[in-house]
Image 1 (cartoon, rainbow, N blue to C red):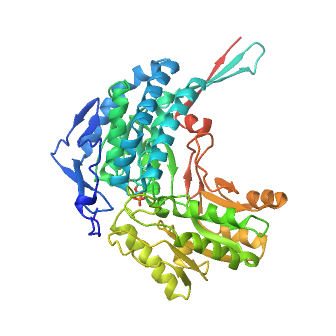
Image 2: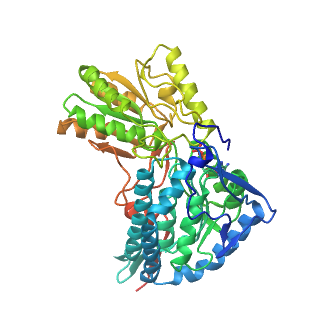
Image 3: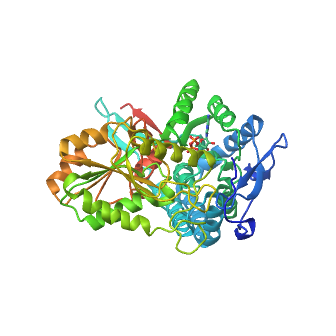
Length: 493
Ligand code: ADP
């Protein structure tokens, strides 16, 4: 990752707490077997936080050995005993929420309030999974012949290979590790190279909570494809759980075919956000701001295309513009900051390219549109109108603080436009007309639809997409079932 000069200096950066500079394998904190490491940077200041091990194939195999050795014992524990350990882990995370949040803000850049909310949500996920793990019920059926019986039961799939992205350094991990451990699986986790420190801190707390050695192994690595190949070529890994780009998801899916590993993929999105005239415009504008600008626009469920009915376009634009102009950009640990830096050089280059293309094709940039005066990877919160559906900014995931408004007049036409993408993760609609809400939400070909509500992630519900946005669900009872195999037993009379 490239660090970039910003107007902040190294002295402006808080010293992050809970920094670990080793990987966790079989209960031991270890360096790479080849003595390699890579650096983790603070995206707000460009300064280095730590060097962590750059693990390769041999280290991955060692972690799989540890997870495989721990599996039988972990799966044999009573669900209630696993739940006790997981509950202790959740409590420790909650107790250290402030420090964990600061660590996350320092390595990822998001505002401290968002980081803290994510840490608490992560603790909540582990707690929820601990409880749900006690309810992995089976089924009893009368069999096909007189007197015969059928029992259907659920069993942990085995060792899991988990690969996570940098945009939610805690919750992407708890959403995989929580259900996997609760179901009785063991895990080899590779967090994103930009944000491994939150993952390691969570691992240290898991140890403190009494998680047995080898149940959770965390490998830091900047050799992602080598790690992916090793995880998918080892038949002891029974499932791959990945969150990240569609491009990498496709690679992992084809690699996982080798041993028919199960796979869950939570991939990219291109979320449409539909606003109909009957809605409360203030509420819809607040929804757009929250959906679009959280994490500086770097979420896979961010409103990517905001479709506004022509009758309310001007009024709605004015409300959103006013809100965007008030957003403070800065380092995440500063008071009242709404937008932190983007994660890295590549991210800001993409946003610059998309906005430049939009401007060139005649779109109107109502505010923002440039790298922020703070320099580095800070980008101005931006509002654009007058775009065409064919523009790259409408087709690609923006992953930056840029809101794009598109006008529509006809309900069925806007549903068609909203669905005109290979992605199918999240969609949103704001309307006070109940019949319209049913029609439109039925018509949207997406895994999740927020109706008059911008924040979709909750432990209670199945998070995930259709089409090229992925396979499988995280959350709710469905999230745990992803980590189980079904066995059916037939008892003759
Ligand atoms: P993003 O573009 O958001 O960084 P990526 O899909 O590149 O998304 O990264 C998400 C996660 O996938 C990260 O942990 C990254 O290291 C990992 N990754 C990237 N390429 C590969 C690969 N070829 N095989 C396995 N994991 C990969």
